[in-house]
Amino acid sequence: MGLHTALTRLRSQVLLWLKGPSALKNPVVFLALYDADPEGLIEAVMRLYGSNRDYTSHYVHQLVRHHRANPLITLYLESEMGGLGRARQFLDALAGSFDRPNPFRGKRCLDVGANAGQTLLAFCERGARAAVGVEIDQARYETARMNLDGVRGEGCQLEVYNNDILNGGFIRTLSTFDVIFCLDVIEHVQNPRLLVHHLSSLLAKEPEGFIYLKVGNPFCYKNVLAEPHYQIPGLVLLPHELAKVYYEASCPHDGLNYSVEAWHSFFGYEGMFRDEGLQCRPLYDCHIYQKDLDRYLRLVEPILVKLSAFCESKQIAPGLRHEVEAHVRGYLAELVAVFDRYRATGDPALDRLIWLKYFPVDSELIVSRHSE
Image (tube, rainbow, N blue to C red; front, side, top):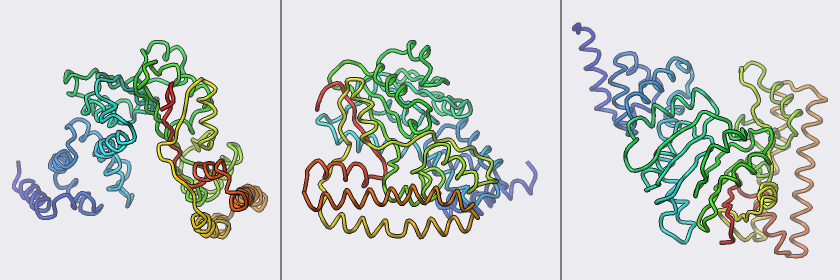
């Protein structure tokens, strides 16, 4: 090792020591550390997130290669590498919604849309008998394989498949599962009813078995203001073909395809599972008060103004803009009418509808074969 290289590495190690984890959150510092001593940076990331070398090295090099000029580079790092910590926290929080302390211990668990395999690792840590993932994207599948390397043989059967959850032939090769997760996947598939059918067929018949489905709620004002994937106002309310045209007009040079097929409300997904003979409950339930309605109406007031400003900034064609605005106005008119009916009647059914259709940012369903 030359003197210059040794001194450069020493400086990077001193910087890491002085700044600690905060050095990995500053894009300028992060890139300086990478350029000076990539292996030292990778080791620091491993220590911070508890990840293995192959997975960490692969991701950090890919991140710098593709996003060096992106000011969000360290946000992407946290989003990826912090996934295991978030999965641990979420599984522990989810366990609190059941009348048993650990709904994962001794269970066969499936994660649909496994991504980098972080949830599979969290299943294993909580005593799952098996943790199986399905990931359709080849690159994400290979990343998951690296992330899971070395975890095998620790008392949990761990596997990830590169396949399509809509593939009936593949589904028939799988055994049933006690716990099935499907997070932020169903809005991307062309046939959500087929996905629901496959999830239902894979759910074990034991009374404690459940499916957890999470998906963005298209009728929450936050998602109307900024669609969950692309942050475009009004996009979440549009049918697929119109949404695609509006997206392409809004982001003509980003090189990304519009990947959402359809959004449904909590009640839409609930109906799909009921058609399969399964019972659904929301992960969180709540009662709506008059003050909640007033506050919500104040929050939706800026939607049309922000939509208009966005269309102006992106130079959206008048005809397309009119179509988008029509869907947003329809949403606002429906919301006001439902709120007014609830004020006039206090109908408990409207209480439930308002809470589950308009308030949560995500629709979260616990699905089982038996009422809980």
